Length: 326
Ligand SMILES: NC(=O)c1ccc[n+]([C@@H]2O[C@H](COP(=O)([O-])OP(=O)(O)OC[C@H]3O[C@@H](n4cnc5c(N)ncnc54)[C@H](OP(=O)(O)O)[C@@H]3O)[C@@H](O)[C@H]2O)c1
Image (tube, rainbow, N blue to C red; front, side, top):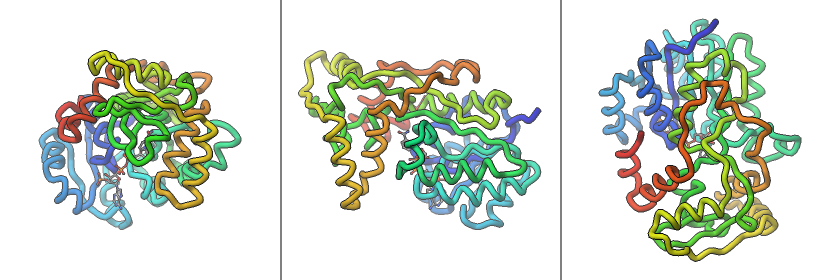
């Protein structure tokens, strides 16, 4: 029976990675070793974050993620690798996985997923934003020794730029909740159901997957904080911002599809997000069942809590978010 006790994390100071690390720190008594692998650039540009991690007992391993020797060295004494690298590095994970598969002490790899199920239905195989993650899944399944867990969370219910509870500046028409102007753009007629996970809960649910290694072995583990609609999200924002009605407009799913198509045709960098929003709005996050229970039903946040945090992040930005990381 394999256990996840000696952890190495890639992408530890990224958008979702920092939430994952915060929750692992909270559960650190369950582990023998917790290390992050990061670049010299991050060590200098995020020196405060790195110092905080060190003070929390995290080992900081510094190197070049594309240098085989640096990665091999970092893999010594590790049994579980957690990757939270950004979209630009998704494909490079096949190298990280190959090296992990060749390292006898490593038995489990969590690739950077933390999104929609990329194998939800037959149409998933053709979705452009899924292609690199699909290659990673296929590669890890072909490994001889490694076990894997794909943590499938759906969209994040958070207010950081571009996320679902944000103003979504630059693409407001594809969905927006703007606390400062009290304006929202809802998809469809506002009643489309979407299953969300807050980034705090991504961390909590990943921690639960680590401490339930048998239940999470070789699975796409589908987890969530809650399922809701744009109308319910809007009502929560209105209630928590003084009670007055926001100025609301709607974008139909047909219009969203048209905007998505145009974005790909014109090379708009927001095309990926538009495709994901279309997938989310059309049932792509609604599964037959979720796996929170098989990893011990960790306590997750509700919509009101997610909206409270999103208001903070929208009004006070990253510093406030960091202060409030729980
Ligand atoms: N469900 C959703 O709504 C949603 C939203 C956003 C992202 N996601 C998913 O979450 C995962 C992580 O995305 P993210 O937005 O959190 O990532 P991110 O903040 O863009 O990047 C994460 C980390 O990747 C590492 N990295 C990136 N480029 C690198 C390079 N050239 N060399 C070395 N390291 C590099 C860095 O690690 P260090 O910290 O060590 O510097 C960085 O902090 C992805 O799979 C993404 O698809 C899901």
